[in-house]
Image (cartoon, rainbow, N blue to C red; front, side, top):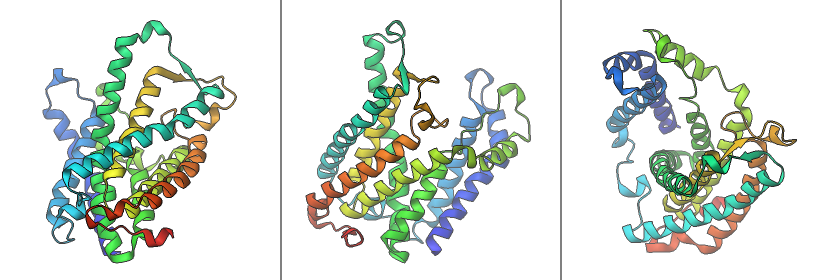
Length: 302
């Protein structure tokens, strides 16, 4: 558990960056650039964490390609990621269909979303999905999973990483208007982040379940190629749906959508369980870990 404690310490360091560095950094930003305080704070937290991670990466022996999750040759990694992306999009189809059938979201008027706007939305979703997936998977299912699994086993790594993964999505949910920002806003934002778990319980559990699912795929395949693809596909679909529709407050089943983003929630959590069984069957049967002799941790899923 030493590795996990170190990662928690690094996360605490990032949160300290929000409290003590966010305001000074925000103050030196160009006034006409329109930078929002919560975005500056989240970037400061990430940079603070990254600096700390660089110092401990070699000590934890997670600075090599395999620990980062890139053990496959480049070409095979891209192919597996592409397959994962397509699989992720396909598996999201019944989720979106359920939302439509239960009238949980209402599509935006065609006047506000023409063909060109829709194409741009799809391309933005694909690009954003890839960026988010690479950053989060390299850290979560790459270095963090590798370090914890070596000490405590893949099962413990999956659970602990999933909890951190879920919690990390709420660090920038607190908003402070520019006209209200002051020297104590960093502390106020940090307090707001730490005080919000209960109202977003459905979103937290849903994200934790996604983390477990991705951790399972990481253990089965021995690398993060499929994780990156699946993650990117899911984010792309979510962004397109949120960009082309709005949460329907009058829908009888809308309560199953979280206030967190109007997409994930109790309904998606139920589908994640079904998707988890499908992915387990797919990757266990496919045996991706045998590619280039790379081995996963499939023993815990036998």
